[in-house]
Length: 629
Image (cartoon, rainbow, N blue to C red; front, side, top):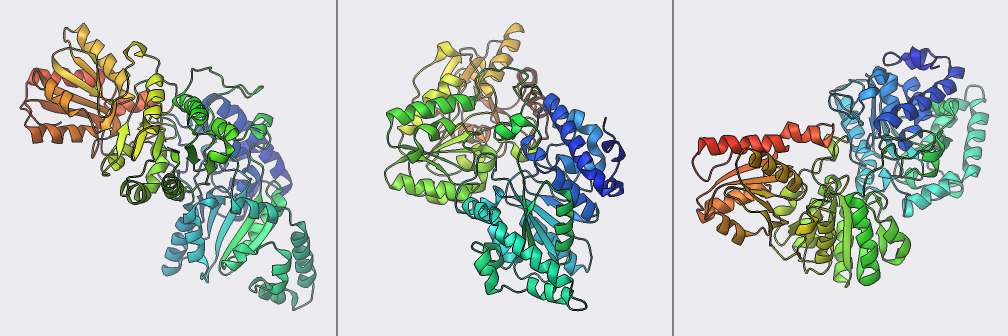
């Protein structure tokens, strides 16, 4: 029974529960999360790790007046429960249901829409400056993980926060993980601090003793807090945060609610920026998630008893990429792999195990990853940079300036391209064809099935220049095996020959186009089906040929229409004055919410039925040539 959880109906109800009953509440929340997410899927391990921390934050602060900003936001499920949204978890990450991330349009207790890493300190500092200018009095807390702390933006914000004269609390949730195990100097430093029990005991003992001095104790303690004394330099390894101008408290046990409430209450009293170092365990309370936190970072529905997926699916595109990279590691000694804290997510774990000297995890630092790859390329290696589409856009300037401008042979494996389903707005890979396509010298490919992904990766490794292979999330397509042809630069393949209408499909839209062609065939219309393969450069020669006996080109892409493949085809048709009309099937100029990929395609008019219907209407209208819808 959920005796404590039943008392949480609205924000701040947690304050009514006696403190000695809060561990019971934490236990009930964990049980609820495990049971609920086993049915819906979601971010499990990260949320199990912050239950006590979230309870303590909601005890010390009052929402929605005070602002809690969650970095990335995938760990905010307990926050949602404590603000009265437990009843909505049945539709978590489903169309019409609540998001798996904080959303301001979902609750006034969600202070900042998040989904990407290392932003919370900047956003919190902005809130603080606005609060002070408007002479308001609410409190601001930014919660950031040690993985997110590897992102340079976090340090830019901490540097900027150092001269604050009013309260701003940064909670560092240190669980030794981002999605994969953390790496690098920050991780090593935190490990050293984590084990520095000498400092913790010293500080708590001295503080306790001084506070007992009648009349003077509190004043002495407050003075010491503002002083970077040489004694601290001797007892804290590095004194990194204090040297940056932040007051450091911790480390504190992130699963001891009483200690958390005490240290957070203390942090509220500081004038200036204070960092509270909280040590937690990712996946706490559920053995499979504790053993495999990366696998349970974002999970599909699973069997509670075993932790195994509830539904067995075929290999994903990421699985195929993983296999190809492992094989290329054997055959191509110059190939290196680079990822931004996503070794497991991008499928590079096997490569890292077999070729550790050629594998580089740079932490959550996409900009650094790309320019680092530029250096690898100049040094004679062939770096394969594997990053999700949504995260790669964070390195736009580095791709343009450091890779394309120098015409370096760097391979971008753009995972999760297109519609991504339940992760929603912040994770959609709907912009890469636009932002990569506008860069001079960039070559872009998109596979129609798992075999083509393998062939394209091999092509990319032996190419000369910047090149990106973009592929979708989820189970890999196994259709069209008989159509397998060698990959040639800028060449498309015609899968079916028809008349009047040519479907020019990119990557994951090839199966959709094929189904639309079947629907039209049942209605007596034979259309031409083309797998474009290359988005840049696309097959201009084929389009000129098709224009001789077709009147309508329909481009299909899981990318925003603006700047995408369809607009490039339209510009080409108009420039060449080809006698065809171009109809663009792409994502409208809007953000696409969470739900299934099938639902998202329907919303964007990218499902087979919608595409077929548009073609019927266009042919019936026999409209003017060279125009777009």
